[in-house]
Image (cartoon, rainbow, N blue to C red):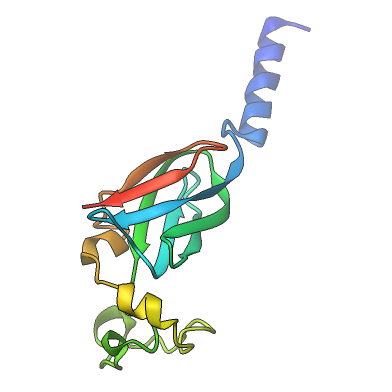
Length: 148
């Protein structure tokens, strides 16, 4: 086999298989000014552009599967928990005005501890276009998100 043919085959295999390191499960903890975020969602947009998300637990931890290894953009969304005083219905405005879909558990009240421990986050952290949160996703390493 000629060197040119070997190089062509190697390039073709890399194009078909890809150069990425695969995917991994990601877990970690999200805090804001040193306090755990008790409710919401962490969204990771991996190097492949595919978003993966995981719910935030009352202790601030989260977990998600199938995140592309490599550089990623991260968002953290923490709307008022269902059943809390802050979650009173609001009029829909802007780009979400036509969106009537809600998660299945969106109306299920949270525990009193979660409702009491919830606090609003700066809006920029929940918008993929405005967030400055980035991470390097590595297999077996937790993703600690410290918001300021």
